[in-house]
Amino acid sequence: MSPAIDNPPFAQDSQHDTSLERELGYATFVSAVAVAAGAIAERLFAFNDLSLVFMTAVVLVSARSRMGVSVFAAVLCFLAYNFFFLEPRYTLYLSARHGLVTVTMFLVGALICGRLANRLRSQVILLNTARAHAEALRQLGQRLAAANTDAEAIATTTAALGDVLEAEAVVLHWHPASARLIENGRDNPARFDPALEAAAQRCWQQANEGAAVVGERGERDVAWHCLPLGAPGRWLGVVALHFSQPLSSLPPEPARLAEAMVRDLAQALGRLQLGRQLEATRLQAETERLRAALLSSVSHDLRSPLSTIIGSAESLDVYRDRLSADDQRLLARDILSEGRRLDRYIQNLLDMTRLGQGAPALEREWIGLDDIVGTATQRTMRVHPGRDIVLELPAPAPLLHVNPPLFEQALFNALDNAAKFSPDDSPIRVRAGVEGERVRIDVVDAGPGIPEPEREQVFDMFHSVARGDRRPNGTGLGLTICRGILRAHGGEATASAPIGGRGTELRLSLPLEQAPSDLPRDE
Image (cartoon, rainbow, N blue to C red):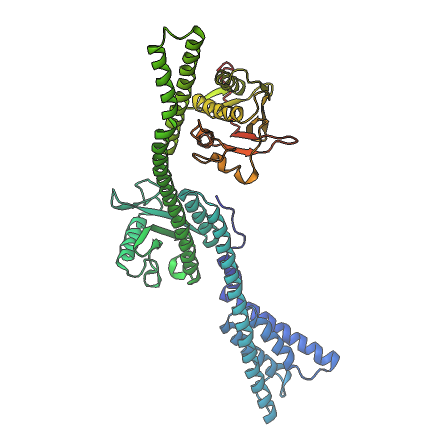
């Protein structure tokens, strides 16, 4: 829920707009103080122009009161000035013509000053209200920009409406299946008031017909102030507001501010919907590109091992009696090597097809980091016999919540890539550890390294640069699959240069999840 906004604009306005009785009492009190101040000034300081004292009193009252009270204060000060300080005193009779002109000019001046002071007060109130409105909209815009789902955007807006307008807010969506407005997927729109459903349906119909919106000045007697959510031709639902006081007693500012907030919500929902559409379009384009690339790869990269296997098998079949035992073992070894190579190609293609077309939800299990690193290392040593792999694992090893076969495939692809592009006599180092809320696995080789501009490209499909994840006998999918599997687990795969040496460091990172307390360690 969004934090409350201090000093809502309408609470500020109500502080200035006090009751009429209190304002009249204040005007009477200030007039009495002006009489006392005038008497003291006349007696102690021989101050004759006492009209300035009463003029000041009128300005003070006008600065804190409405126009009617300002006029009351001006007339009251005019009568008090005439009664107490103009000859003949203690009567309202004026004995000289200049006295009549004086009090008349005083009354006119007091009314003008009161009007100007009251106008200045009104402008200050409007400016404070406008500032509060702008601040509320700014804060709402920031929170909506950070929202990642429709539910977050709706919750943020309803909380802001409640804080700023001091009203209960409910967002109703149009549900095409039931042909009615429902809230948060529940077919119960009238949970606040029985009049909500009728008001929301009326607002929805009028919005689609292009008529005036329910809750405007024409229908201020309804219990709910309803606003359509969306834009003409693309209405998404209705936002209903229930104020603590009758709608007929509310100024027009709450309706205008509510409309602005609802427009911001509609724009945020439109942005999220557009983002989902763009993501779906991007995934579809990637899938089509993947299919085309896979077809072109099959015709080239799978033919080479097949040709070797067929040629070696034919030689064994036709020339078995003429071949020595060493030649036969060499041909059998070629068949086995190319068969394993073909198996890796097919496995990569299957993995990439599944990732590109959107694999189902991963079936995750808890497995020790040392177990999965050991399995991937043994598999790498079978493919690259004689390769020295140095492990640097933490003790105790953390538990990973992953799909073991897929994650093992990702780690194997990283190790296989390091073995291909580093000298045969150089070791491959596997360093693992926990950093903050993530688990990292670094695969470091001593190969020629990857130039910085190409460190992101090596994760692209069918990368053809010689230093990338591709050789004449490779499909260029190893690191692409590695990153895809890591991202499917909420992790990431990156390439960088190791500190203080040559080669490449491939880092695989995963979120560190808390294992259940009742999970047996051997699992």
